[in-house]
Image: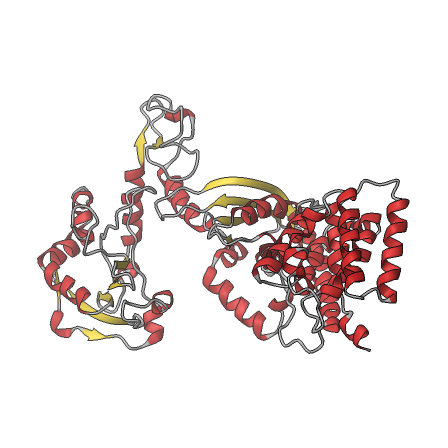
Length: 546
């Protein structure tokens, strides 16, 4: 309901939900809905205790079927005038124009359960009246009160539904007498597994009825990603001899985890924990507990199939805590450094792995494939403490800075900290390797020369210089020869505009000396560009004013 309240109809109105309670009278062989005693539930605690059944005949069942129990339904037209329906009921079927109750009529005929048959018989007789209530408001919940009990609290009902669900998923193997999956439930366990026809299904996996029911619940619990990054989900599976069933339940209980996170926020703990590590280190598990971490493709529809992309196994919690501690220390150091450079900035410098990668690798597309694919590559390395280097990071930063200069966007002065954060959490000291190169030194001197034409200067003699030249820097310093030409061009402009100040002359002489003695290393335009941007955007404005 909270998620629904954030949506708006075509007139911009928020969607508010009305909760109705409808008493159900027991008459022996039948039920009676007491519409005269219908009331509105205003108690928020009672509202939160209600549950509805999402009934499916298989994982790939795309129909919204209603079997029994409480109903949650909303319908409204959005700002595109399209009809939107949410909840466990549908009044306007997409194809056959039949409601969710009708969608379960066929399957309910085979259900030998007196309670379910009694409930559906009464519902069928009052279907029009109930659906009128559902239509009366943009969002409605109907709670059926069975003598002060909810439908799921009635003895034996959940077990009966489990049997119904499992019977629709399996067939009995004639050779063994055991059960095999006949419909898709989980990945390669049968049903739609390639190469496993009816005569070979028993070779894949055999089950008992209890195992099928357990599998239904287990897949629903652990298949749901703990962390989501666009279309990629991260699933965490803890295992250890030192783990208890209570700890497992606590870990997978989203509601309790959410409460725990809120407490952590109040205690100012969660702000120190990176989003991609919180699930692994903020739990009650012993440090010896290990995780299997699975990166899966999240299906676009509920009926879709999760497909595993990458898996890393046996990552110990103690290792994850150790890796995170290093990440946290890097954050603190960079926050202090950024605050010194920008002491008057009101925005806090809160770094996170996910956001820093997004700032450097993100694009204007909705799926951000480059960003997703790269995270899919490096996150397993980060979790397993094997993130030694990342050759894509520096070229991506240079490309992003140039794009932002041409089109307007985040400046290098602040974007650089996301780069430094990501490069400093690597195991190798790759930043030192870059900044100690001659290519980087060449860029530094070239940047000192070029900053006479920086756009932030009030006395900038060439206003178009920054967008035209700095915004396409890597194209102008592709090779050492191209860099020499660009340096000559800048020197010529400095002479024309009488900007050959002492620090500029010194930088030019050092650049010439470096070029003359450039031996022992391969020239890198990206190292050069980083040095350029560091000096070009460096904190020199105050010094020059002095």
